Structure formats: structure tokens, C-alpha cells
Image (cartoon, rainbow, N blue to C red; front, side):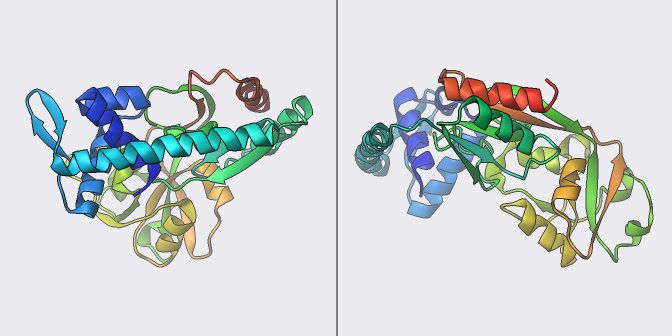
Amino acid sequence: MDLRQLRYVVAVAEEGTVTGAAARLFVSQPAVSKQLRALERELGAELFVRDARGMTPSRAGEALLAGARDLLDGWDVTLARVREVARTPRIVVGMQTAVGRGIHRAALDRFRSARPSTTLSLRLVPWRDPTAGLADGTSDVAFLWVPSDEGFASVTVARERCLIALPADSPLAGRDRLRFEDVASLPLVALPESAGALRAWWLADDLRTTPAEVAATAEDADTALELVASGVGAVLLAEGNAGLYPRAGVVCRPVDGLPDAELRLAWRPDDTRHEVRDFVAAVGRASGG
């Protein structure tokens, strides 16, 4: 259980529907539904009574809500106090994979030059949170692969062709290029189910007539490629990431028929701090935007 799940429970209880909660939290409806189901499985109790009119907290849900609100209120107060005491302007940058591509270093250098007194922190967020910390407030800006949860302001940082990472001893590894038809039946390493639309995109669900065979799931790029090297399955990845995550025993090949991958910098639209504005500008200049 984590704070993000508790925020989802409170939002659903107050909005009365998953749709309303998702809009309020700037996340997708499937993401909220999946986290609720995961929490209900963990607790061994249904938290909401679901009917045509919406969702009403069950007795177990009411019991959780009282404590959840206290925990969230206490955390928000504590966080505000910490920031007030620190006084130093701070920005946290969430990432699900390394950024690189000649953008990352240039953007950080430009931002530090513009705001030398601002503390900048980088955090790698597991794929189970497709917002890379934006939804629960633990990141101020985030590099996200599209599709990501809607509701955030964003700018495109890079568009890249898709490759497939294969075990080096795969029969397909000796070919320079592949078609989607060549790889469609391969077992794949997938993102966690909580990644929602992002998981579906990296499984190329829109191009399939039958579901992909999922051999394993991974929380991050290093784990995914280690599974590929071990012969568990293949994984789709952006071309730039092939150079950022080299692995012995893995080869990457372009796949014709796949759409380009898009990397975007996102932030909450109601966050109007100068630090956020200046970081967005620094990334835009570094990426040529």
C-alpha cells in the first residue's frame, strides 16, 4: 500500500465514480481501477459497492477512509513544513528510463546556469507508475513515454523508431531488419499491468489480432533487458534506449510496421512555479524546441 493508492481511494469516495476520480487526479481511468483492485486484493476486502449510480464505500472502505484521510492530511502538512524549513527552491525530475540523447546533460547545464540556487533532484520511478511521480506529487516534472496518463501539460522531447531487443542466440538476431509479422508471435517482457496504456503500447496491442504472449513483467529497463539476455523473452524499446542500456547477450533490430516512440516532458498544469517553467524551457532549448 502507498500514498498514491490512498489518494485514489479518497478521490473515488468523494467523486462517486472512477471517471471523476481520474479526472481530478490527472490520471487515466484504467490506472485508478487497477490500483483499487490491487488494494482490495491486498486487504482481502471490497472497498466500494458498485452499482449503476456509481461507487459507494463499503464498511471496509469507510474504515479505511478515516485513516487514509488522516494519513494524507498529515503527510501534506509534513511536506509543507519540510519545504518551508528548507527554503531552498527545489525541483524533482522523474524518469522511467534514462534520457540521454544529448538532451539530458545539456538541459541540466542550462537549468543550473539559469537557476544556480535551485536544488535539482533526479529520481528513477518504476514503470508501475506511468506518471513517473507526477500524479502523487513526488515529482515536479517528468520524462514520459507516450501514451502516458492524460491531464498533464507536456512538450515533445524526441521521436524515435522502435526496435526489438532479442537474445543474441535468437534465429532472428542475424537479420538486419525485421517486420512486425516476424516478431508478433515472440514471447515478450511487459511492463506491469498498472502501467495501463503504456504497457499496451509497448506490447503493440493495437497491431495485433490476438493478445501478445507475456513471458514476464519488469519494473524497469535494466530488469527487462536482463530477462532478454537470459532468454526469457524479447522486448520492444526506443532506438535511443538501445544505446543507453547495452547488455551482453542482447541484440537490437529495427522493426518495420511499428509506430515511432515519443518521449515527452510533462508537468502538472496548475504548477506555475518559476522552477518548473525554467526547467521546461531548458529542456526545450536542449532538444531544439
